[in-house]
Figure (cartoon, each protein chain N blue to C red):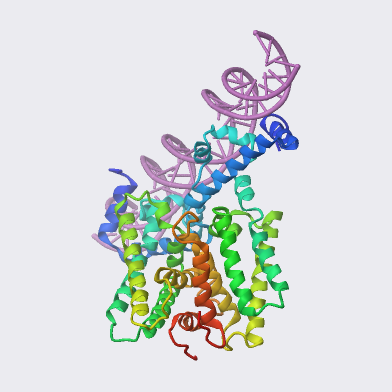
Length: 219
Length: 219
DNA sequence: AGCCGAGTCAACTTCTGTGTTGATTTTGCT
DNA sequence: AGCAAAATCAACACAGAAGTTGACTCGGCT
Protein backbone atom coordinates (compact mmCIF):
# COMPACT_ATOMS: atom_id res chain seq x y z
CA UNK A 1 0.00 0.00 0.00
CA UNK A 2 2.98 2.28 0.50
CA UNK A 3 3.71 4.40 -2.51
CA UNK A 4 7.18 5.48 -1.58
CA UNK A 5 10.05 4.66 0.73
CA UNK A 6 11.03 1.16 1.64
CA UNK A 7 8.12 -0.41 -0.16
CA UNK A 8 9.18 1.10 -3.45
CA UNK A 9 12.77 0.08 -3.01
CA UNK A 10 11.77 -3.44 -2.05
CA UNK A 11 9.60 -3.71 -5.12
CA UNK A 12 12.44 -2.53 -7.30
CA UNK A 13 15.00 -4.85 -5.77
CA UNK A 14 12.63 -7.72 -6.26
CA UNK A 15 12.07 -6.74 -9.87
CA UNK A 16 15.77 -6.71 -10.59
CA UNK A 17 16.21 -10.09 -8.98
CA UNK A 18 19.82 -9.62 -8.02
CA UNK A 19 21.16 -13.00 -6.86
CA UNK A 20 22.73 -11.77 -3.64
CA UNK A 21 19.51 -9.97 -2.80
CA UNK A 22 17.49 -13.12 -3.35
CA UNK A 23 19.97 -15.16 -1.39
CA UNK A 24 19.76 -12.87 1.60
CA UNK A 25 16.01 -12.96 1.37
CA UNK A 26 16.08 -16.74 1.31
CA UNK A 27 18.24 -16.72 4.41
CA UNK A 28 15.74 -14.58 6.23
CA UNK A 29 12.86 -16.83 5.33
CA UNK A 30 14.88 -19.80 6.49
CA UNK A 31 15.82 -18.19 9.78
CA UNK A 32 12.22 -17.20 10.30
CA UNK A 33 11.09 -20.75 9.64
CA UNK A 34 13.46 -22.09 12.25
CA UNK A 35 12.17 -19.66 14.83
CA UNK A 36 8.54 -20.22 13.92
CA UNK A 37 9.10 -23.91 14.42
CA UNK A 38 10.77 -23.39 17.78
CA UNK A 39 8.63 -20.71 19.32
CA UNK A 40 5.54 -20.55 17.18
CA UNK A 41 4.54 -17.85 14.74
CA UNK A 42 2.80 -15.51 17.17
CA UNK A 43 5.52 -15.71 19.76
CA UNK A 44 8.31 -14.96 17.32
CA UNK A 45 9.13 -11.29 16.90
CA UNK A 46 10.81 -9.60 13.99
CA UNK A 47 13.52 -8.62 16.42
CA UNK A 48 14.21 -12.32 16.99
CA UNK A 49 14.47 -12.89 13.28
CA UNK A 50 16.66 -9.87 12.73
CA UNK A 51 18.97 -11.02 15.47
CA UNK A 52 19.14 -14.53 14.08
CA UNK A 53 20.20 -13.28 10.70
CA UNK A 54 22.34 -10.45 12.05
CA UNK A 55 20.60 -7.37 10.75
CA UNK A 56 18.48 -4.66 12.23
CA UNK A 57 14.84 -5.46 12.50
CA UNK A 58 14.01 -2.66 10.10
CA UNK A 59 16.21 -4.06 7.36
CA UNK A 60 13.94 -7.04 7.10
CA UNK A 61 11.40 -4.80 5.45
CA UNK A 62 13.77 -4.26 2.59
CA UNK A 63 13.31 -7.94 1.82
CA UNK A 64 9.79 -8.73 2.84
CA UNK A 65 6.62 -6.77 3.29
CA UNK A 66 5.48 -8.24 6.56
CA UNK A 67 5.92 -10.93 9.14
CA UNK A 68 3.15 -12.87 7.53
CA UNK A 69 4.99 -12.87 4.22
CA UNK A 70 7.84 -14.66 5.95
CA UNK A 71 5.47 -17.36 7.08
CA UNK A 72 3.80 -17.68 3.71
CA UNK A 73 7.09 -17.77 1.91
CA UNK A 74 8.26 -20.53 4.23
CA UNK A 75 5.27 -22.78 3.85
CA UNK A 76 4.39 -22.02 0.25
CA UNK A 77 4.79 -25.08 -1.80
CA UNK A 78 4.67 -27.36 1.19
CA UNK A 79 1.11 -28.40 0.71
CA UNK A 80 1.59 -28.89 -2.98
CA UNK A 81 4.54 -31.16 -2.24
CA UNK A 82 2.20 -33.42 -0.32
CA UNK A 83 -0.44 -33.20 -2.95
CA UNK A 84 1.88 -34.03 -5.81
CA UNK A 85 3.04 -37.05 -3.87
CA UNK A 86 -0.45 -38.33 -3.39
CA UNK A 87 -1.37 -37.63 -7.01
CA UNK A 88 1.61 -39.44 -8.43
CA UNK A 89 0.74 -42.32 -6.16
CA UNK A 90 -2.80 -42.41 -7.37
CA UNK A 91 -1.40 -42.81 -10.85
CA UNK A 92 0.67 -45.91 -10.05
CA UNK A 93 -2.25 -48.28 -10.44
CA UNK A 94 0.05 -51.09 -11.55
CA UNK A 95 1.67 -51.34 -8.14
CA UNK A 96 0.25 -53.44 -5.37
CA UNK A 97 -1.60 -51.33 -2.84
CA UNK A 98 0.70 -52.39 -0.04
CA UNK A 99 3.64 -51.24 -2.07
CA UNK A 100 1.99 -47.93 -2.75
CA UNK A 101 1.36 -47.34 0.93
CA UNK A 102 4.93 -48.21 1.72
CA UNK A 103 6.11 -45.74 -0.87
CA UNK A 104 3.76 -43.13 0.43
CA UNK A 105 5.06 -43.44 3.97
CA UNK A 106 8.66 -43.30 2.90
CA UNK A 107 8.30 -40.38 0.54
CA UNK A 108 6.16 -38.39 2.90
CA UNK A 109 8.73 -38.72 5.64
CA UNK A 110 11.50 -37.91 3.18
CA UNK A 111 9.65 -34.78 2.16
CA UNK A 112 9.26 -33.78 5.78
CA UNK A 113 12.90 -34.40 6.42
CA UNK A 114 14.19 -32.59 3.38
CA UNK A 115 11.96 -29.61 3.93
CA UNK A 116 12.68 -29.21 7.59
CA UNK A 117 11.64 -27.06 9.32
CA UNK A 118 9.15 -25.55 6.88
CA UNK A 119 6.92 -28.59 6.71
CA UNK A 120 6.72 -28.80 10.43
CA UNK A 121 5.88 -25.13 10.68
CA UNK A 122 3.11 -25.84 8.26
CA UNK A 123 1.86 -28.72 10.36
CA UNK A 124 2.28 -26.92 13.64
CA UNK A 125 0.65 -23.66 12.81
CA UNK A 126 -2.83 -24.54 11.86
CA UNK A 127 -2.67 -22.45 8.74
CA UNK A 128 -6.40 -21.90 8.92
CA UNK A 129 -5.77 -20.10 12.20
CA UNK A 130 -3.28 -17.64 10.84
CA UNK A 131 -5.28 -16.57 7.85
CA UNK A 132 -8.75 -15.07 8.05
CA UNK A 133 -10.03 -17.64 5.58
CA UNK A 134 -10.94 -15.20 2.89
CA UNK A 135 -7.46 -14.52 1.62
CA UNK A 136 -6.88 -16.30 -1.66
CA UNK A 137 -3.81 -18.25 -0.64
CA UNK A 138 -5.62 -19.49 2.46
CA UNK A 139 -8.45 -20.78 0.32
CA UNK A 140 -6.01 -22.43 -2.02
CA UNK A 141 -4.25 -24.17 0.85
CA UNK A 142 -7.49 -25.34 2.39
CA UNK A 143 -8.49 -26.70 -1.01
CA UNK A 144 -5.22 -28.58 -1.36
CA UNK A 145 -5.56 -30.12 2.07
CA UNK A 146 -9.07 -31.31 1.29
CA UNK A 147 -8.02 -32.71 -2.06
CA UNK A 148 -5.05 -34.41 -0.50
CA UNK A 149 -7.03 -36.03 2.27
CA UNK A 150 -9.64 -37.30 -0.10
CA UNK A 151 -6.94 -38.90 -2.25
CA UNK A 152 -5.63 -40.81 0.73
CA UNK A 153 -9.11 -41.78 1.81
CA UNK A 154 -9.73 -42.99 -1.70
CA UNK A 155 -6.58 -45.06 -1.78
CA UNK A 156 -7.52 -46.77 1.45
CA UNK A 157 -11.11 -47.23 0.45
CA UNK A 158 -9.98 -48.97 -2.73
CA UNK A 159 -7.64 -51.20 -0.78
CA UNK A 160 -10.47 -52.31 1.43
CA UNK A 161 -12.81 -52.89 -1.47
CA UNK A 162 -10.35 -54.88 -3.52
CA UNK A 163 -9.60 -57.08 -0.53
CA UNK A 164 -6.04 -55.94 0.04
CA UNK A 165 -6.98 -54.55 3.41
CA UNK A 166 -9.13 -56.27 5.97
CA UNK A 167 -12.81 -55.56 5.72
CA UNK A 168 -14.42 -53.83 8.67
CA UNK A 169 -11.87 -51.07 8.80
CA UNK A 170 -13.29 -47.58 8.66
CA UNK A 171 -11.41 -45.97 5.75
CA UNK A 172 -11.56 -42.52 7.26
CA UNK A 173 -10.26 -43.61 10.63
CA UNK A 174 -7.60 -45.73 9.02
CA UNK A 175 -6.40 -42.72 7.08
CA UNK A 176 -6.40 -40.63 10.25
CA UNK A 177 -4.36 -43.25 12.04
CA UNK A 178 -1.71 -43.22 9.34
CA UNK A 179 -1.80 -39.48 9.08
CA UNK A 180 -1.35 -39.16 12.84
CA UNK A 181 1.70 -41.39 12.90
CA UNK A 182 3.29 -39.35 10.14
CA UNK A 183 2.40 -35.86 11.24
CA UNK A 184 3.14 -36.39 14.90
CA UNK A 185 6.79 -36.70 13.91
CA UNK A 186 6.83 -32.92 13.97
CA UNK A 187 7.02 -33.17 17.74
CA UNK A 188 10.06 -35.35 18.01
CA UNK A 189 11.90 -35.86 14.76
CA UNK A 190 14.98 -33.80 13.91
CA UNK A 191 16.81 -34.44 10.63
CA UNK A 192 20.14 -34.24 12.40
CA UNK A 193 19.10 -36.69 15.08
CA UNK A 194 20.22 -40.26 15.38
CA UNK A 195 17.11 -41.77 13.82
CA UNK A 196 16.91 -41.67 10.05
CA UNK A 197 13.68 -41.25 8.14
CA UNK A 198 14.37 -44.57 6.50
CA UNK A 199 14.30 -46.29 9.88
CA UNK A 200 11.13 -44.51 10.82
CA UNK A 201 9.48 -45.30 7.51
CA UNK A 202 10.49 -48.93 7.83
CA UNK A 203 9.02 -49.28 11.31
CA UNK A 204 5.87 -47.35 10.54
CA UNK A 205 5.28 -49.33 7.35
CA UNK A 206 5.75 -52.57 9.25
CA UNK A 207 3.24 -51.58 11.85
CA UNK A 208 0.69 -49.99 9.64
CA UNK A 209 0.73 -52.58 6.89
CA UNK A 210 0.68 -55.55 9.22
CA UNK A 211 -2.10 -53.70 10.96
CA UNK A 212 -4.34 -53.34 7.97
CA UNK A 213 -3.52 -56.09 5.50
CA UNK A 214 -5.99 -58.86 5.00
CA UNK A 215 -3.42 -61.57 5.44
CA UNK A 216 -0.53 -61.30 7.82
CA UNK A 217 2.85 -60.56 6.37
CA UNK A 218 6.10 -61.44 8.02
CA UNK A 219 8.80 -58.83 7.68
CA UNK B 1 2.32 -8.59 43.57
CA UNK B 2 -0.35 -5.94 43.95
CA UNK B 3 -0.94 -5.01 47.55
CA UNK B 4 -4.32 -3.37 47.11
CA UNK B 5 -7.21 -3.11 44.72
CA UNK B 6 -8.43 -5.93 42.57
CA UNK B 7 -5.68 -8.28 43.63
CA UNK B 8 -6.69 -8.04 47.25
CA UNK B 9 -10.35 -8.55 46.50
CA UNK B 10 -9.58 -11.53 44.30
CA UNK B 11 -7.49 -13.09 47.00
CA UNK B 12 -10.27 -12.63 49.52
CA UNK B 13 -12.99 -13.98 47.25
CA UNK B 14 -10.85 -17.00 46.60
CA UNK B 15 -10.26 -17.49 50.31
CA UNK B 16 -13.97 -17.46 51.02
CA UNK B 17 -14.63 -19.93 48.26
CA UNK B 18 -18.16 -18.81 47.56
CA UNK B 19 -19.74 -21.38 45.21
CA UNK B 20 -21.11 -18.92 42.68
CA UNK B 21 -17.76 -17.20 42.56
CA UNK B 22 -16.03 -20.49 41.90
CA UNK B 23 -18.62 -21.43 39.34
CA UNK B 24 -18.13 -18.23 37.40
CA UNK B 25 -14.44 -18.68 37.58
CA UNK B 26 -14.81 -22.19 36.23
CA UNK B 27 -16.87 -20.83 33.37
CA UNK B 28 -14.16 -18.39 32.47
CA UNK B 29 -11.49 -21.04 32.45
CA UNK B 30 -13.71 -23.19 30.27
CA UNK B 31 -14.42 -20.38 27.81
CA UNK B 32 -10.74 -19.59 27.68
CA UNK B 33 -9.92 -23.22 26.98
CA UNK B 34 -12.33 -23.30 24.06
CA UNK B 35 -10.76 -20.21 22.57
CA UNK B 36 -7.21 -21.37 23.19
CA UNK B 37 -8.07 -24.56 21.37
CA UNK B 38 -9.58 -22.69 18.44
CA UNK B 39 -7.17 -19.84 17.99
CA UNK B 40 -4.16 -20.74 20.04
CA UNK B 41 -3.02 -19.22 23.31
CA UNK B 42 -1.02 -16.34 21.90
CA UNK B 43 -3.66 -15.35 19.41
CA UNK B 44 -6.46 -15.31 21.96
CA UNK B 45 -6.97 -11.99 23.74
CA UNK B 46 -8.61 -11.34 27.06
CA UNK B 47 -11.16 -9.31 25.17
CA UNK B 48 -12.13 -12.45 23.28
CA UNK B 49 -12.56 -14.34 26.51
CA UNK B 50 -14.50 -11.55 28.13
CA UNK B 51 -16.81 -11.40 25.18
CA UNK B 52 -17.31 -15.14 25.16
CA UNK B 53 -18.37 -15.15 28.77
CA UNK B 54 -20.24 -11.88 28.54
CA UNK B 55 -18.31 -9.65 30.90
CA UNK B 56 -15.94 -6.78 30.53
CA UNK B 57 -12.34 -7.73 30.00
CA UNK B 58 -11.43 -6.07 33.27
CA UNK B 59 -13.81 -8.21 35.29
CA UNK B 60 -11.77 -11.25 34.43
CA UNK B 61 -9.12 -10.00 36.79
CA UNK B 62 -11.53 -10.38 39.66
CA UNK B 63 -11.34 -14.11 39.02
CA UNK B 64 -7.86 -14.73 37.76
CA UNK B 65 -4.55 -13.00 38.07
CA UNK B 66 -3.43 -13.23 34.48
CA UNK B 67 -4.01 -14.74 31.10
CA UNK B 68 -1.45 -17.37 31.87
CA UNK B 69 -3.36 -18.44 34.94
CA UNK B 70 -6.30 -19.23 32.69
CA UNK B 71 -4.09 -21.50 30.63
CA UNK B 72 -2.56 -23.19 33.62
CA UNK B 73 -5.90 -23.66 35.28
CA UNK B 74 -7.23 -25.24 32.10
CA UNK B 75 -4.45 -27.73 31.61
CA UNK B 76 -3.61 -28.44 35.22
CA UNK B 77 -4.30 -32.01 36.00
CA UNK B 78 -4.31 -33.01 32.38
CA UNK B 79 -0.85 -34.46 32.37
CA UNK B 80 -1.45 -36.26 35.63
CA UNK B 81 -4.57 -37.83 34.12
CA UNK B 82 -2.40 -39.39 31.48
CA UNK B 83 0.22 -40.39 33.95
CA UNK B 84 -2.24 -42.03 36.33
CA UNK B 85 -3.60 -43.99 33.44
CA UNK B 86 -0.23 -45.31 32.45
CA UNK B 87 0.67 -46.10 36.03
CA UNK B 88 -2.47 -48.04 36.74
CA UNK B 89 -1.81 -49.92 33.55
CA UNK B 90 1.69 -50.77 34.57
CA UNK B 91 0.20 -52.33 37.68
CA UNK B 92 -2.12 -54.69 35.82
CA UNK B 93 0.57 -57.27 35.25
CA UNK B 94 -1.96 -60.08 35.25
CA UNK B 95 -3.56 -58.88 32.02
CA UNK B 96 -2.27 -59.92 28.64
CA UNK B 97 -0.20 -57.20 27.05
CA UNK B 98 -2.55 -56.93 24.10
CA UNK B 99 -5.41 -56.35 26.46
CA UNK B 100 -3.48 -53.71 28.30
CA UNK B 101 -2.74 -51.84 25.10
CA UNK B 102 -6.35 -52.03 24.08
CA UNK B 103 -7.36 -50.61 27.45
CA UNK B 104 -4.75 -47.93 27.17
CA UNK B 105 -6.00 -46.78 23.80
CA UNK B 106 -9.60 -46.72 24.89
CA UNK B 107 -9.05 -44.95 28.16
CA UNK B 108 -6.68 -42.43 26.68
CA UNK B 109 -9.21 -41.48 24.05
CA UNK B 110 -11.97 -41.40 26.67
CA UNK B 111 -9.85 -39.05 28.75
CA UNK B 112 -9.31 -36.81 25.74
CA UNK B 113 -12.98 -36.83 24.98
CA UNK B 114 -14.18 -36.17 28.50
CA UNK B 115 -11.69 -33.42 29.05
CA UNK B 116 -12.27 -31.63 25.82
CA UNK B 117 -11.00 -29.12 24.98
CA UNK B 118 -8.47 -28.82 27.79
CA UNK B 119 -6.50 -31.88 26.81
CA UNK B 120 -6.24 -30.72 23.26
CA UNK B 121 -5.07 -27.32 24.39
CA UNK B 122 -2.42 -29.12 26.36
CA UNK B 123 -1.39 -31.12 23.32
CA UNK B 124 -1.54 -28.21 20.94
CA UNK B 125 0.34 -25.65 22.93
CA UNK B 126 3.71 -27.09 23.46
CA UNK B 127 3.66 -26.27 27.13
CA UNK B 128 7.39 -26.02 27.14
CA UNK B 129 7.03 -23.10 24.76
CA UNK B 130 4.68 -21.13 26.94
CA UNK B 131 6.67 -21.40 30.11
CA UNK B 132 10.26 -20.27 30.49
CA UNK B 133 11.28 -23.69 31.80
CA UNK B 134 12.30 -22.51 35.19
CA UNK B 135 8.84 -22.03 36.64
CA UNK B 136 8.06 -24.87 39.03
CA UNK B 137 4.85 -26.04 37.38
CA UNK B 138 6.62 -26.17 34.04
CA UNK B 139 9.28 -28.40 35.49
CA UNK B 140 6.67 -30.59 37.07
CA UNK B 141 4.84 -30.98 33.79
CA UNK B 142 7.99 -31.76 31.89
CA UNK B 143 8.81 -34.37 34.51
CA UNK B 144 5.39 -35.96 34.17
CA UNK B 145 5.66 -36.13 30.40
CA UNK B 146 9.04 -37.81 30.62
CA UNK B 147 7.81 -40.28 33.22
CA UNK B 148 4.74 -41.00 31.17
CA UNK B 149 6.63 -41.63 27.97
CA UNK B 150 9.09 -43.92 29.65
CA UNK B 151 6.22 -45.97 31.09
CA UNK B 152 4.80 -46.51 27.63
CA UNK B 153 8.21 -47.29 26.21
CA UNK B 154 8.66 -49.78 28.99
CA UNK B 155 5.32 -51.45 28.33
CA UNK B 156 6.17 -51.90 24.69
CA UNK B 157 9.69 -53.02 25.38
CA UNK B 158 8.38 -55.72 27.72
CA UNK B 159 5.88 -56.84 25.11
CA UNK B 160 8.65 -57.30 22.59
CA UNK B 161 10.87 -59.12 25.03
CA UNK B 162 8.22 -61.52 26.23
CA UNK B 163 7.31 -62.36 22.66
CA UNK B 164 3.88 -60.78 22.61
CA UNK B 165 5.00 -58.33 19.98
CA UNK B 166 7.03 -59.14 16.93
CA UNK B 167 10.76 -58.89 17.37
CA UNK B 168 12.57 -56.35 15.24
CA UNK B 169 10.29 -53.51 16.19
CA UNK B 170 12.00 -50.47 17.60
CA UNK B 171 10.22 -49.89 20.91
CA UNK B 172 10.71 -46.16 20.81
CA UNK B 173 9.36 -45.79 17.30
CA UNK B 174 6.51 -48.11 18.03
CA UNK B 175 5.54 -45.95 20.98
CA UNK B 176 5.78 -42.84 18.83
CA UNK B 177 3.54 -44.42 16.22
CA UNK B 178 0.87 -45.15 18.77
CA UNK B 179 1.28 -41.81 20.39
CA UNK B 180 0.92 -40.08 17.04
CA UNK B 181 -2.30 -41.86 16.22
CA UNK B 182 -3.77 -40.87 19.56
CA UNK B 183 -2.55 -37.30 19.81
CA UNK B 184 -3.26 -36.37 16.26
CA UNK B 185 -6.94 -36.71 17.10
CA UNK B 186 -6.63 -33.19 18.44
CA UNK B 187 -6.79 -31.99 14.86
CA UNK B 188 -10.00 -33.63 13.84
CA UNK B 189 -11.95 -35.16 16.70
CA UNK B 190 -14.86 -33.31 18.33
CA UNK B 191 -16.80 -34.95 21.14
CA UNK B 192 -20.07 -33.80 19.61
CA UNK B 193 -19.18 -35.18 16.19
CA UNK B 194 -20.63 -38.27 14.61
CA UNK B 195 -17.68 -40.52 15.45
CA UNK B 196 -17.54 -41.83 18.99
CA UNK B 197 -14.33 -42.46 20.87
CA UNK B 198 -15.33 -46.08 21.16
CA UNK B 199 -15.34 -46.39 17.38
CA UNK B 200 -12.02 -44.68 17.13
CA UNK B 201 -10.51 -46.80 19.89
CA UNK B 202 -11.82 -49.94 18.26
CA UNK B 203 -10.32 -49.08 14.88
CA UNK B 204 -7.03 -47.87 16.25
CA UNK B 205 -6.67 -50.94 18.46
CA UNK B 206 -7.39 -53.18 15.51
CA UNK B 207 -4.78 -51.52 13.42
CA UNK B 208 -2.12 -51.10 16.03
CA UNK B 209 -2.44 -54.52 17.62
CA UNK B 210 -2.61 -56.38 14.36
CA UNK B 211 0.37 -54.30 13.38
CA UNK B 212 2.56 -55.28 16.25
CA UNK B 213 1.47 -58.65 17.55
CA UNK B 214 3.64 -61.64 16.94
CA UNK B 215 0.82 -63.75 15.60
CA UNK B 216 -2.03 -62.35 13.60
CA UNK B 217 -5.31 -61.89 15.34
CA UNK B 218 -8.63 -61.79 13.63
CA UNK B 219 -11.04 -59.26 15.03
C1' DA C 1 38.17 12.61 -5.65
C1' DG C 2 33.38 12.36 -6.32
C1' DC C 3 29.14 10.08 -7.46
C1' DC C 4 25.64 6.48 -7.32
C1' DG C 5 22.85 3.10 -5.68
C1' DA C 6 22.15 -1.05 -2.86
C1' DG C 7 21.63 -1.91 1.70
C1' DT C 8 21.33 -0.52 6.66
C1' DC C 9 19.69 1.45 10.81
C1' DA C 10 18.27 4.94 14.58
C1' DA C 11 14.35 6.99 15.66
C1' DC C 12 10.06 7.53 15.12
C1' DT C 13 4.60 6.38 14.78
C1' DT C 14 0.86 3.44 15.42
C1' DC C 15 -1.46 -0.22 17.15
C1' DT C 16 -2.78 -3.80 20.09
C1' DG C 17 -3.03 -6.14 24.20
C1' DT C 18 -2.15 -6.69 29.26
C1' DG C 19 -2.92 -5.24 33.66
C1' DT C 20 -4.72 -1.38 37.25
C1' DT C 21 -7.68 1.85 39.50
C1' DG C 22 -11.56 3.69 41.83
C1' DA C 23 -16.10 4.66 41.09
C1' DT C 24 -20.43 2.51 40.09
C1' DT C 25 -23.96 -0.96 39.74
C1' DT C 26 -26.08 -5.08 41.29
C1' DT C 27 -27.39 -8.38 44.71
C1' DG C 28 -28.78 -10.26 48.92
C1' DC C 29 -29.96 -9.48 53.51
C1' DT C 30 -32.42 -7.23 57.41
C1' DA D 1 -36.41 0.72 51.86
C1' DG D 2 -31.68 0.87 53.10
C1' DC D 3 -27.23 -0.94 53.63
C1' DA D 4 -23.06 -3.62 52.95
C1' DA D 5 -20.74 -6.83 50.32
C1' DA D 6 -20.03 -8.73 45.81
C1' DA D 7 -19.26 -7.96 41.29
C1' DT D 8 -18.62 -4.99 37.23
C1' DC D 9 -16.78 -1.67 34.13
C1' DA D 10 -15.08 2.84 31.99
C1' DA D 11 -10.95 4.92 31.78
C1' DC D 12 -6.32 4.90 32.09
C1' DA D 13 -1.28 3.50 32.28
C1' DC D 14 2.08 0.80 30.30
C1' DA D 15 4.68 -2.36 27.40
C1' DG D 16 5.98 -4.50 23.40
C1' DA D 17 5.77 -5.35 18.71
C1' DA D 18 4.69 -4.09 13.77
C1' DG D 19 5.60 -1.12 10.37
C1' DT D 20 7.71 3.58 8.39
C1' DT D 21 10.87 7.19 7.49
C1' DG D 22 14.79 9.51 5.88
C1' DA D 23 19.40 9.95 6.67
C1' DC D 24 23.59 7.41 6.61
C1' DT D 25 27.30 3.92 5.14
C1' DC D 26 30.03 1.62 2.07
C1' DG D 27 31.67 -0.62 -2.12
C1' DG D 28 32.08 -0.11 -7.01
C1' DC D 29 32.61 2.88 -10.90
C1' DT D 30 34.18 6.94 -13.57
